[in-house]
Length: 171
Image 1 (cartoon, rainbow, N blue to C red):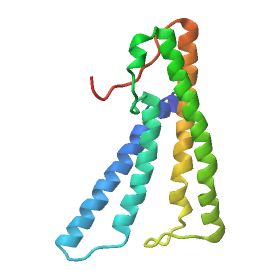
Image 2 (image 1 turned 90 degrees about the vertical axis):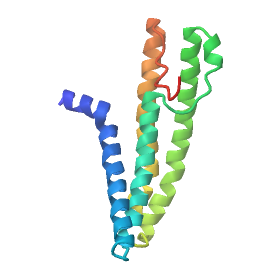
Image 3 (image 1 turned 45 degrees about the vertical axis):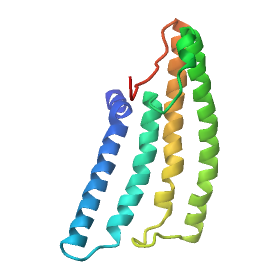
């Protein structure tokens, strides 16, 4: 069971990203084919692709927090000792966690209102709360990754190791 949870921690978001991305590509391909070959389009294709994209974005944000791959300006960190860099990253993680808590709190209101009034999507007629929950769920996943990052940074500071600086898009 422990190995299963470790595997989910390492690869769960990747698999979810793959599923949502593949679904978006397939749904849009089918819709383009239907529209330009069969001169007919459906209601479900564009709408499901849009909602899958919303989930894709929030899962990707959580992955970026885990890998420290968000856009950042690291000019100052080149001039600081490793301990200073660790405290800068720790401060950034704490600030992001604060903002994520606010976002979770404020993004739950539309979900609860949608459930209360039975709001449904325009084309699919599915309860809209299933799609609105993507925002608080995404921020909750980010919070989990931020807690992991903060604990990793504290261990690195305590043990005198260089802090994890994350993956870089460009070198």
